[in-house]
Length: 122
Image (cartoon, rainbow, N blue to C red; front, top):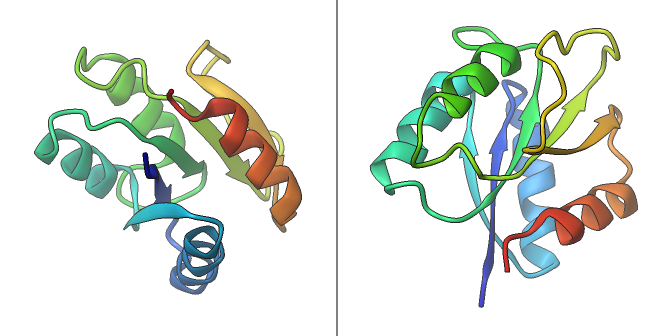
């Protein structure tokens, strides 16, 4: 079974580099530049099983607003999230069971892979 990761980050270079690295590790990768695009991708796929790698500070819909919207949508509420951020204090939404890990930028690939493996749906 292919494990799918949805990368949600406004930094295009980071999305591309992480996407390539994760594909080399055997993940299928989808990308969104903000929370609104991520919600659209998830809803278009009927809540397809994936792990979401979520930046917090983004334009249009930031990580906090994305988490609130995700938790209000019964088709995707249970999808696991790995939060990545350059600002430790940026996450305002209370930690909930869907947030499986918090990682700081710059991202250490071994920590990301461990978090994704632990969070990946069976």
